[in-house]
Image 1: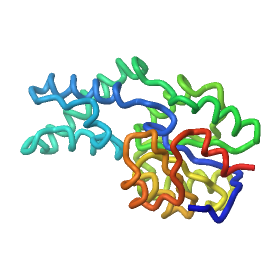
Image 2: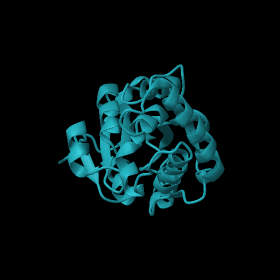
Image 3: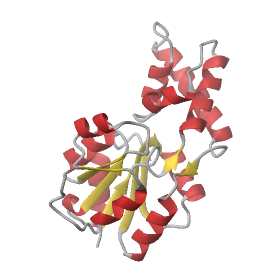
Amino acid sequence: MKSDRTSFPAVIFDLDGTLLDTLEDIGDSMNITLQKMGFPAHPIEAYRYLTGDGVFMLAERSLPPGRKDEITLQACIKEFRAEYARRFFDKTRPYDGIPELLDELTSRQITLNILSNKLDEFAKLAADRMLSKWRFVYVLGARRDVPKKPDPAGALLIAQKLGMNPAAFAYLGDTDTDMRTAVQAGMFPVGALWGFRDEKELRQGGARELIRSPAEFLRFFA
């Protein structure tokens, strides 16, 4: 597909599965949580589909059928947060090519931002710890006062704070949640095929373009 615009002055990145490979640390933390609660663990690859829509949905999808009552869900979330805080950076790394992409976007003076369904405290910690070399103007994770993706509120809030039209943003993410967020916000949705989900899901979510490597993203910027 050809894009009808070839240069954007700003970008919103998803975090998990797009900038950072967080799958093993998330999976390990939830598996330990489940085992502590007396429930079976999941293969790490299963977390490609269990995660991505916030901690509540991660807990709900991970718990066994019949054990998704509110008390159990809240206990699971609380324990997961504690476990994830202990091993947050054990295996998490930027994907290959991401540092080079961010270097080049910075050199082109593109405005960089992050919008994640990861809890806000963890999203900011990840940016500070793993991506501190680059300046992200806004890093917005899941907060009580901003609806989580695919609601476009977070993306629109970033655009508003920057005083920019939403159409000025390319949006890079790896799930249908990201693509639907971008579409609803009036941004240009680009699907990252190195992340947690597949081409079919990204296209169904509304991806205008799909890319197989971070370097391919540069074609959308002057």
